[in-house]
Length: 133
Image (cartoon, rainbow, N blue to C red; front, side, top):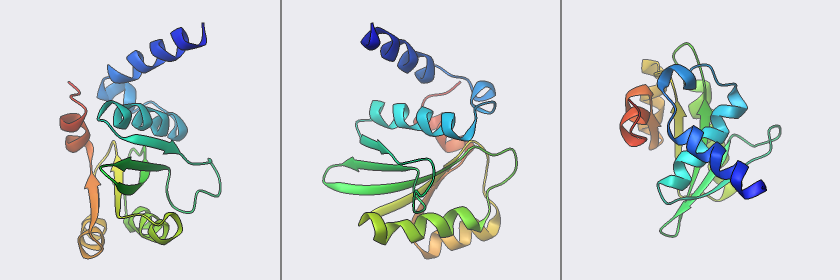
């Protein structure tokens, strides 16, 4: 029964619209990303809700570790999210870092991310990468 419910939840998350994603809580958005990244072939660890050291997810693929800061926002994401994920690189011994949001990024966040080689996935990127209509 547990496997059936888990599979049903996975199918639900894989077929969400942006309108539904925008209504998720922060933690539900993290779970949504967990399922989507697994679907893309990553091994995913969802970190603890508090004391996450700046990373909500830890991804592994092709021998590389990537830390992810997830932001389910109604407004643009600022530099704090980039600073948090940059700080998590050393703690998790990661090779890469990214910030993923259902929204977009401020210019200062984009500049800081560029300087620190942090990948940013905004609304358009998640629609494309996760095939959301």
